[in-house]
Image 1 (cartoon, rainbow, N blue to C red):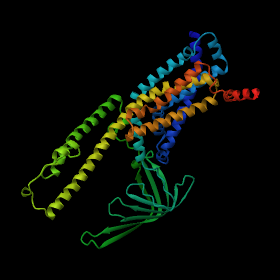
Image 2: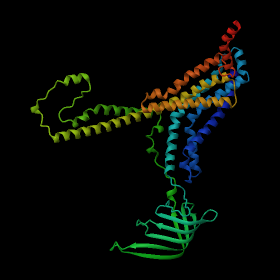
Image 3: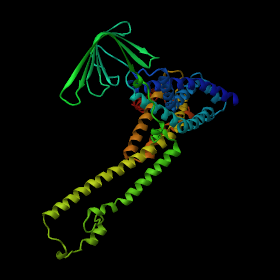
Amino acid sequence: MKKLDKLILRAFAGPFLLTFAVVQFILLMVTLLKYMDDLIGKDLGWQVITKLIFFFSVITIPTALPLAVLLSSLMTYGNLGEHHELTAIKSSGISLIRILRPVLIVSVLLAGLAFWFNNRIVPSANLETFSLLWDVRQQKLALDIREGVFYNGLPGYTIKVNKKEGENGDLLKGVMIYDHTNGRGNSTVILADSGRMFTRFGGSYLGLELYHGRTYVEQPDSRDRAGASFIRQGFDRNLITFSLASFDLGRTKKELFVDNKMMKNIPELEQFTDSLHDKLVVERRTFPRQLNPYYTYIRLDTTGRALNRRVEGWQVPPAKLPVLNTALVDQAENRVRNLRTYVGSTSEHMSNLAKEAGNFRIEIYRKYTQSIAVLLMFLIGAPLGAIIKKGGLGVPVLISIVFFIVYYVLSIIGEKYGREGVMPVGAGMWMATALLLPVGLFFLNQARRDSGLLETDIFGRLFRKIKLPFRGYKKAV
């Protein structure tokens, strides 16, 4: 039996590693394409790009594991069936459950590893990823001075170049620079016939060497605001140095992102969810008392039938009521209007609190469902491979993609329904598992009975069975 387990595990290891690497690469590319607009044109450097790729790879592992297990288990038992090894093992008296046991044990270990990874490693990776991605989004585009376009990427300056020449575009023609560093608008203008652009001091500064130009400076008169003097200075060569510190990637404190639900593990999520729930309970309890100031005399909730019958016979002597006039009507209308506004805003606030608590609960359930998905995909893939008896990357890949898309779509629908309150959060998050589990058990039962469920001639045999009574009728005639 040990040799049999080694044979099956050896047949499973290769396809699993291959499919996991392929799926991980595909998910990584999808994630990078999603944020490609935030990365292009900012001269981030290979260190930042490498960090983002590494962290994106880490956070996509929980999604890649179920699909890898589904595809590899289907390929493993499909190959065994295609080469008649599965038939030979069954003919020796070994049941299908015993044949599935080695990969089942591996799948259980992978599910436990996925849960630990999703609860411990992924929150830290999310913190690193999205804090860095936030800083990248705030990063300015790389220095890009174009012909005939005013460029204001350098703080305090606006630059226009009529023409750029040279292999690297570092030779400039018709340079115009507006200097705003003194805070007086366009009080200083520099014009030059030509110039040269280069970096200085290890790339931390930009040098702009101008040739044959003039500097125009407007100096306002402190005693006469309407009056101003102008200074014009000519130069043959003028070197201006700009700081490029504004193009450096500034890092934001990670403590500002730790309250996000994606950055927390299960104990932290449960603690935050309980605090939101307690806050919601307190606000619902105190809400009726906060309505009292909007009523002048007495406030009764007559929505209930019993209380309505209790107060319907009450009569207030007219002598105790003030004379009805326009002021009292206006006051009542204003109070009703204020009460409606207060009730609406408070209701919206409570609804947002409930949705926020639901979002945190969704994140808790996600850590469990993504781990159980590994076992679910094995339960579908392994019996299905024993039924179809096809290995390789053809039919198994197609079937795996179909089932994973179904699972993914059902998961999204359940999460949406749970977030919108259409169904309880737990029911929505477990909906995909609950709907696909009977499918896996059905495939397992069919595989134990050596059913030809997906064989190509099954429909022909079924059609012949249906036509058989009619054939007998013809013979009798």
